Length: 228
Image: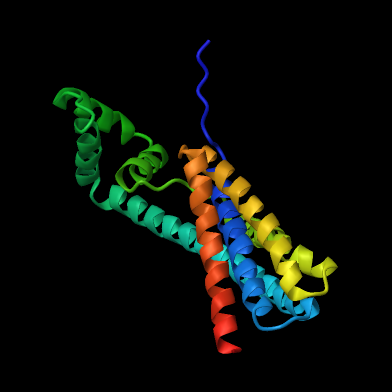
């Protein structure tokens, strides 16, 4: 039996990717930069934790506002479509026919489908929302879920590069451990992200590692240059 495998939680995966990628990269770069300027790991941990809290709130709020905007846009367009099927039903039927014309259906069949569809106003509007405007009905809890998923993913990602500084008091020595575990985490994260999105997993993982390494390296070198 043929079984199709599709990703059904693409929005949640997207939120995890957004939160985790920034959570791994930004605190990692901050810790590396501070390590180039101070020797005490306690300062790095304090600043890093403050950044993780602020970053997770900011990222979560961004996810909430994005989800809320999508929902508001959908309901605005839904109201407009209901108004149009009331005021200009023949024009809306022509738009239905055009959708099926693009699928190669005959004019007679297009007309038959448009007439049948117009008998159920709710189904008609739902069809126009999906196939004319490309809009799916949003989950009413989507904004809150997005905020929570992004925020938690950011925190989880951010703790990884900071963890060596908690156990190693010298910031320079802790930086070595931070680099090792963070680059490994970035590779694993990049690998599975690429695999889920249908991209070559190894090359995708390498790209994520390179981006994280460049960000941390730039921050470290800048801090060293300023403090010379």
